[in-house]
Image 1 (cartoon, rainbow, N blue to C red):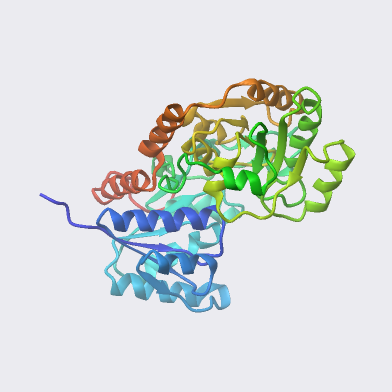
Image 2 (tube, rainbow, N blue to C red; image 1 turned 90 degrees about the vertical axis):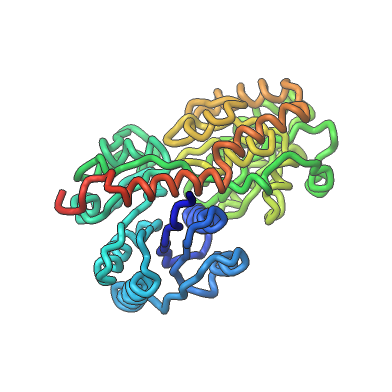
Length: 395
């Protein structure tokens, strides 16, 4: 006998782009594909609101937020009441309390689920002390994020200020659950990307290492460290090429690094790329030398889904994403020496065969496809509705 579909509303006051919006929209889509009644309430005329419409996800447009976001809260509360929503799910840090307030004002007692997509606890004192008591469940996107929420993580000697003190929240930690996200494995799969390689100036014999992601000040995702390591490897590996794929305000700085390090013609910034599956298939190895915080990197899963090895910093939630594919190498964060050594090792490795790439894709598809993500969430929602979590109240 089929179970009755759930009525779920995701609240998102941004829908402007980024990993949190991407996961929110993917989840709502997956839930719909799996037979659930899942919609999104948020602003129109944003990058991701267009995607919501294209995917035919039920979309409840919210007005301009107004003072203290009250118009957003009141419209969300009305939608919850009219649609008889059972579960209200908030994602952005800025939407945690509005999600709680909208659920209360609806007067229908829906369950309140919040997801923490960042590798740190909420920054405000009230949130750290009272948030957990006012929701029904708090999802962490990785085991590392759950550890931050429960215990806090302290690295006082870190050169990254945001890594030095990450305080825990207070409350009943039985409400915290780890639930990994998903990627679009229908798009991210092995295919021939010779045309993209040619567009980027890569010859068939070139071994293309690439950092894919934004490069905003102060340090991006470790692109400068990547170039330092590349300068050490380039003389030993003539066919190696070192690409920076993305956009940000460090472009001039990175181009200056390329010249200063003697990497002109060996390293470059690609034009901004909208077709990321083609980009991932065009390279030979993804390099993810993250220096800041990282909750759970979808880009690592995307590389594995395309059958590519990954060299990545062993920090925060990165090892958890790496463990699924386990193809490549984890290195000490901020170590140019280890990164250079790993680049040289993987430059000497033969490229994966077509069957090997397919097998790696299938592994990622089973565990981290959008539909696998949705199925995990449905199981969690049903567990929540069955009363498996502690009751809401003061912590």
